[in-house]
Image (cartoon, rainbow, N blue to C red; front, side, top):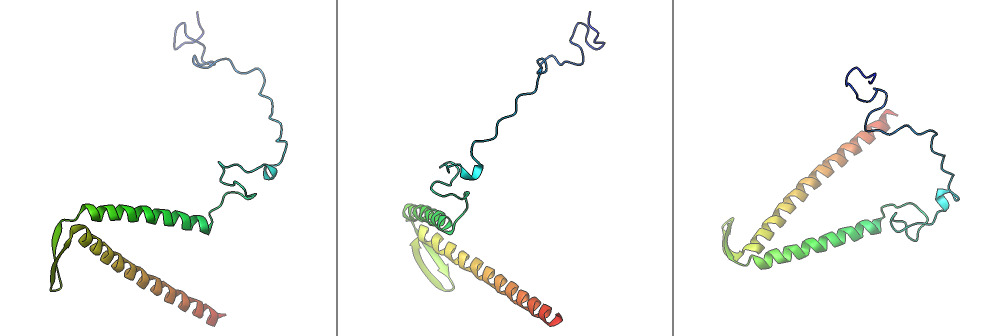
Length: 142
């Protein structure tokens, strides 16, 4: 029989049943590459096609992504406005009238964006003033 006290007739505890025998010798070491990594030609997959430097984010690339994203959003906005042409009655600060529903929602979104931009600008100005005061106080202490 087997020497395993837990499972009669099963494998010994040193060798699990789902693992083959251990390799007799370690695998051979891989030879060093023929050329250093800096001298290897760039590939398209790595994002360095035509350049000898590693892939990096450039201003032109960021502008391109921003422009494409803005154009896609603009097309979606135009589709939204064209599909929502039902007249909607709008009353605001004593003004009263009807505009297409899509245009009314667009105007509301632009108004909300202006409010967010104004709050953000106020916070940026507040932080710049605080930074300037801290720099001036450091100069006086030195």
